[in-house]
Length: 302
Image 1: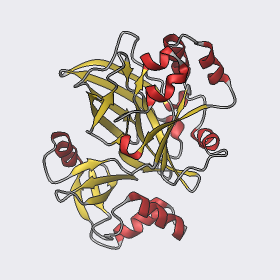
Image 2 (image 1 turned 120 degrees about the vertical axis):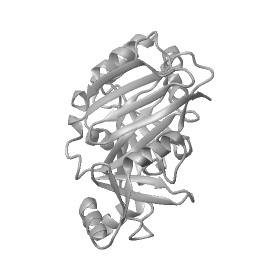
Image 3 (image 1 turned 135 degrees about the horizontal axis):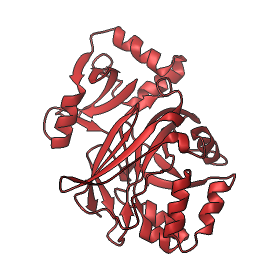
Image 4 (image 1 turned 135 degrees about the vertical axis):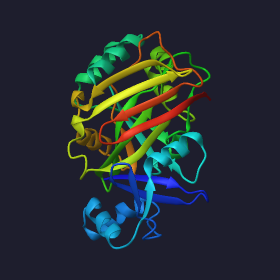
């Protein structure tokens, strides 16, 4: 099932569960303590009941409030109405893997003055994994995302993301790994500055359990960039083209490195705009992954 965190007009969080397409059932309206996805995942772990099965039991035990997902999307986009979509969870850390697709390796080589290292990473046993974002820098659906004021070549990176709890993958969402290609291209050692800055990441629109997405490596990924009402870029790929699995990335991340529960990990991109393209203020970036949904953000300069 898909799990959405939304805020009502009083700013109070609600967890809505999409059992049927376009319809959310509020699990918070049955159990007030379940106003955070983390609490529900912890309860699943303690009880030994799979997340989706536990959710169904709770929803079937009462009369949950019913909400229209389409209406919530409209209200969130216009910033009006009774409900707003929030990011599905608060990740204490966000990490990312790079050069996990062949096309990404080719593009990183193109932008870099030291291209050979990217071929090496793509073919090496150890993946490239880097710290991407803190909770405060990670945004949700329809919130602003940043491009650096000291960069002149910036792109979104649409990526499948997974969430870790007690060392294991418990579900998936969409991530936007914003990147300054000019800064990283100058020198690979500038990667932290190219990747980690204010408003440099977003996740959402929902969390999807591993019970629902049993194979994360057969998902379609699309990206669209709209400028002044017109599409200026679109691309698509499939997670089947990943050279490394989510489980492999999770394993390498946690070797000699304990990460907190609900750490979120971006798995790399295969959709890269052409070299003559850079994001501008006001651009709208839409990332769609099958079985998850659409993550939309507007670009500003930070």
